[in-house]
Image (cartoon, rainbow over all chains, first blue to last red):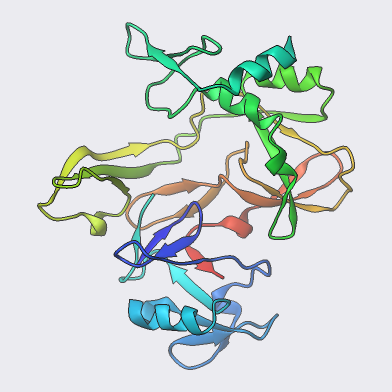
Length: 85
Length: 203
């Protein structure tokens, strides 16, 4: 998976657009409720936030296909993400 | 004179090379660094009349930033309300990049991650280089404040003038906050650094 930090857009390694990450609520990951190993629950909006560090590209694409509004978390230091400009 | 200048720059942004390898804009004769895609003077003049800035983004009003003496003077001539700030260069920021070209297709890409380095089918055009994102062509910059902007209104600034660290990465890059949400206090924009901080993205 690739991310453009300037636009917060994420792509597959082959360049297919996945999603632009945007959240107007600004809740920190550490402040969210635990929900198993792969996700957390936002304390303000109650939505599930999926941690992409524990998902592969196929899972992420499937997730966004089923629910384009699904929330994702990407950390620059996770192993499965590369930065592009 | 202003109208004439604005009409001139809507044509093709032609350029010619100077003896020093810099580019000279054929529209306004401004001489600029050859690493820039277009004449910055014309680019910011266009912002003055860009209607797309009136659109909302993520439910927030967009605040236009202009840079360079020519554009700031033109904005004053137009009677726009400005908050003028000095664009300082800070050595704290560094962002690395590498340019690669595909040997068969000729496609050129820019990467910013050591882990994204490609195989033999990509040749290096520019090896790993650090650039300072706080360096702009001019130290003069200003926000255009909409006259009906209410105190405590949250807005989106697409080109932040003041320097804020938006994130540090374990590969050595220190990112400058270029885009951010902010709150208009009535006198200045209070930048909400966390709104576009780099490091962790949720959304």
